[in-house]
Image (tube, rainbow, N blue to C red):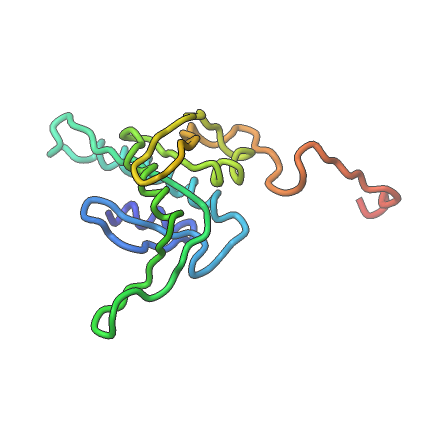
Length: 175
């Protein structure tokens, strides 16, 4: 778990809670960045690589492999202290958290599934395989998920409108 937490911290995420054999991480709370979804995907890919390295370095596994499955979603959540005066935890709750959890449960070992909201924010930077029509527990309608294949060799622009180019006119000296 420590290696996975380090992969979260590397991208300035926060480990929200440990869940037995897993963890829940937040990107964008308590500190928000404009590229939280990208940071989460990069962290998830690093987690897959960390688990591969751990599997390779653990002779006690005797040929078996460690695996993780990861689900990512971006959306509105309620963040803050949950609990009582005796025990208070900073955490996130809401439908967005539930969808991330359901994607994680559906993901095959060694894969990262993302929601449409994460896909839209990161499709210029990563390659994906689309998985339409998933029925997930606790989610009323079918959703389209996307399996992360890896970082693009030549990522597109992270900002601006796709296909729109605005040349600089009269700024030759400065350019």
